[in-house]
Amino acid sequence: MSFDMWGQMISGLKQCGGLHLLRWPRDPSYALAELLADLAAHHINIVFATTAFDSSSSQQVILAVPAQAGPLALKLAALRAQMLGLKRPVLERDATALNLYPRGRGLMLPARIWQVLKKKNVFPLGLGTSLAALTLVLQEEHLMEALDTLPLALGLPSGASPSDAGLESPLPGKDKTTPSPEISTRYAEKPIMVYHLDPETGTALLSGICEEPLDAFACVKGELTARTVFFSGFKDNGCFRFLACAPFQDLHLLQNEFKDSGLLPEENPQPVSLFHLQGPHFGDRPGIASTAFAALEQVGVRPLAFAAVMHSLFLFINPQKTSHALKGLSHYFCTP
Image (cartoon, rainbow, N blue to C red; front, top):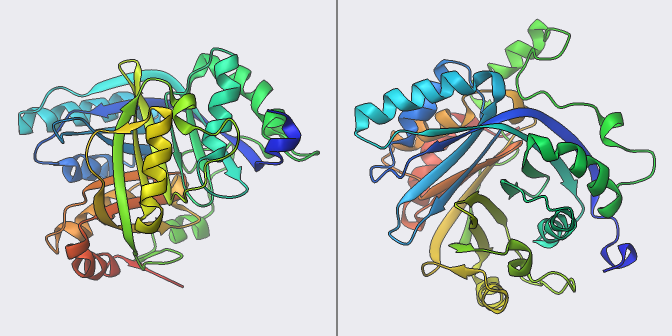
C-alpha cells in the first residue's frame, strides 16, 4: 500500500528506554494485587502491562519495568509466587519500547506497524493502544531498525523526529537533572488526579491467539471498520495473544473481521465495564496500578483483566460490579 493511502498516522514518537519483561505466571487466585503492592513499595514503575487468557481461562500477565529495576522485580515476584505456591516468574531482558502518538482510532496503526516491521524481519514482543498513545515493545537489538523505518512509513510530520523528541525516562530522576520539590509533591498527590472516572459501559472483551498478527488485523486494504476501545497483545511461544475491547454494537463486525483474517477468539466475548484511568504523570509515577487494585479490593471487586499503556490504566470489570468499582476508585482517584 502506498504512503498516500495510509496517510499521516502519527504525530510523534519517543523511545521509552531499556526494559525487562516480567512474566507473572498463570494465577488461579489472581493474586496480582500483592505483587503490584510489592513493586510500588520499592518504587518500581510499570511501563507497560497486559493480560492474556489461555483456553482454560487462566491468566498470564506481562509487566514491563525499567531495566535497572528488573532484577529486584524478579526477586520480589519470585518470593510472592513462592508464598502463593505458583510457578516461578520469568524475566526477559534486553527489551525496549517506543511510544507512538496516533491520529485516529482503531487497529489501523498496529496493522501498519506490523506490515512495516515484518518486511524487516522484526517482530514486536508486544503492543498496547489507548486513545492517546500506542506502546510498542521490541527486542533492544531491533530498536535502530524500527527508528530508521517507522517514522517515514507512519508519516511522522516534517521537522519531527525521535531524536528531536528526545528520550522519555520511565522513572523520575533518571534524567541528568533531579525533579524539583514541586514535581515530587505533585507525584505524591492524594487523591490521584485523573482526567475522568466514569466507566465505559456496554462493551465486550475478546481474547484470543493467532500466529500471523499482520494477516489477523486484516488492514492491508485499510478496510477495518469496527471501533475498538482498546487493543493489546504480546508474543507467547511463537504466537500472539491478544485482548480487544469494543462496544456491543460493533462486536459482530469486529468478530467477523477477526474471523475472516484468522485471529480467532478462544472464548465467547465477555461483557465488561471499562474504567480508563488516565493522568499526565502516570508514565513516571510508581504505584498507580497498585492503588487501583487496592481500591477495588476494598469494595470486593476483582478486575477481570487489566493493562497499562503509557499514561493510561485499563481495568475491565464485571458489569454487575460497576457501581462498587466506581465507589472504590473514587476514594483514591479524583477528576479536576
